[in-house]
Length: 143
Image (cartoon, rainbow, N blue to C red; front, side, top):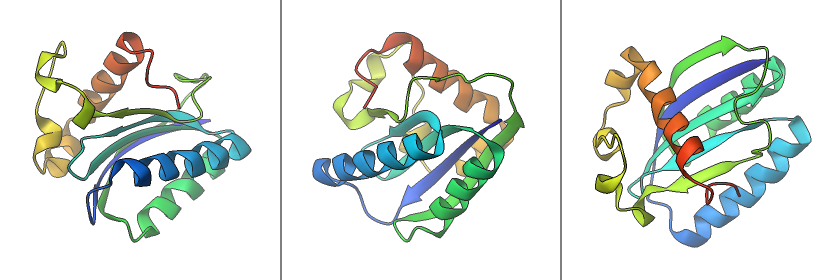
């Protein structure tokens, strides 16, 4: 198994109904492929996602994401072999930061408010800190 983290920019901002549709489709596809993980959307077009599962399925999904016309600047922040899942029950955990008073979150950083994909590529562990925070502090994530 592997885990893979990426950041991308949407070609247009997603509204609530588009996010719900994306999450429904992703949940069903991920369940069929045995993929779990977490998706964070900043409400202004930036996605940060952590996916985990069997190598071939994760790589296949990542390739589909890179080819998806709704994304641009898809940047892999890191990928590594794992022996167990971080999010075993989350077919698609999700957080829309536009619904959060983000500045009040413990450890808040405005990295997703700016175009920091190149900087994050150098500090990919920071993305894992963000994911861990949401996993530990939120019960409303799971879709």
